[in-house]
Amino acid sequence: MAWEVPDRPGAVEGETVFSAHNQVSAGYLETIGIDLVEGRTFEPTDGTGGYLAVIVDRAFAEQYYQGESPLGRTIPWDDDAIHTIVGVVETAHYVTLDEEPAPTVHWPLTVGSEGQVQTARNVDVVLRTAGDPASFIAVIRREVQALNSRIPVSNPRTMDDVMSAATARTSFTMALLASASGIALLLGLVGIYGVISYIVSQRTREIGVRMALGATAPSVKTMVVRQGLTLAGGGVVIGLVAATLMSRVMASLLYGVSATDPITYIGVALALIAVSLTASWIPAARAAGVDPSRALRSE
View 1 (cartoon, rainbow, N blue to C red):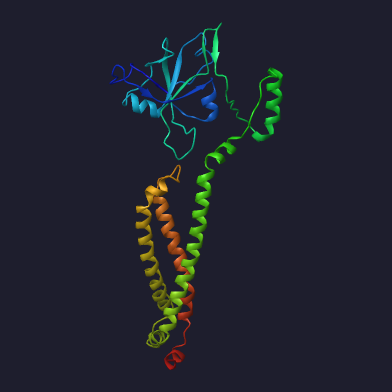
View 2: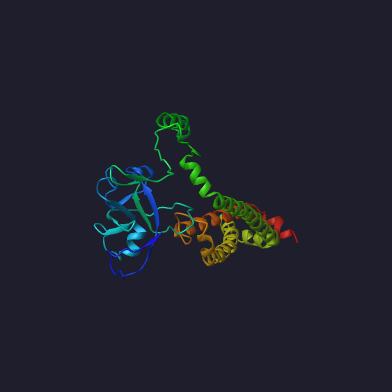
């Protein structure tokens, strides 16, 4: 939607403002869970024979009011009706979670005089329930039919269904990545175990000499585990660098967390070190159990 909004900082005559728009009734924003930033939300009298109110989201306020409070500013509607901004709410995603939400203006669902009410022809009714939302669908259909049998109730869905549909493609992609990551982690576990086991078998005589000269079993374990962790540490560093370079690609698959979230990076690094420690421990325990006399006699 595009129109002129002269009552804003830096407005130029003829300059067009672009935004999404959403016609809602009183109680919608509270029901859907969109938080109020400042001002107030809609009241039943807004728009119909009462105060011509309008609510903008944070993205609209920041983009077009340059850090100033938009409360009390006016926005034209249908060339002759002037609505006053009474509230600012948080920016919400209405299409998909991975898209940058467009600045949005919330208008009253009903506008006009009390005798000539104008409303939207198609509306989505949002209900908040205390129990299982799916169990209320039959009740909703019955109540709507009782009000007006000509009004159809089409495609009733729970918010979980809406969220699942919005994130279906991303969830599938993340499931594939998680499966591939799990396989890579398993291969890494087996690989580290195999390398350390081979190194221990090649150093059996050396380990026997060390133990014959007084090295203790814990010190031998530490030596072997340290070697395994050195290999793993190098891999973790390379992996973190590669993940940082790929962060822009991963950003499109994430919601609610940064692609360079330090907690996630630290957690994954610690998990990989723990897996490497596990893979190195068994060969280390085997090395600590070497009989010095037998090791010295073996070639």
